[in-house]
Length: 193
Image (cartoon, rainbow, N blue to C red; front, side, top):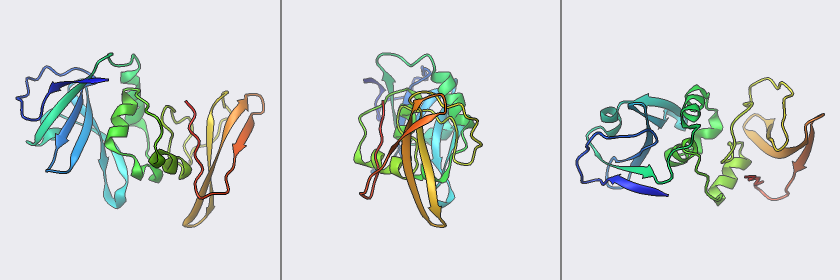
């Protein structure tokens, strides 16, 4: 799916392309990832209280003098790559994205959706966006009634710190009509691709 353009120990030539994935080795165990877009690296950063934010920084600022590798998608980047970056930059991340990691973020921008893992299912059950979906309405946004066939609804309920989430899929636009998924176990997993 990717080919190595620059290994960790190689010199950086500066011939970067949109969609190149930068993996930075911060120390022996910690790595960070970002994607190159028009001369800058788009990155997902952790902030206080384990929240996240999306930002752009130049290559030197992102790598910070650390070793880094560059990977390029073999089949090329999707046509919607720049739109994906713009949408991500305008996104107001909500608290449920605190488990969202930098690799998932980069793969989403490049429209690479891998099979869901147990971790993905836990994130979905706590209200995070499933892979392969765009956010049409955030939890705090007003609903305009514009549901489309196949849209996934993740509903937040609960009182104070005891939040719960459940999901449904729009099966008819007029109305709309929602198929609701319920589960008696601890987690609900809905992954539609």
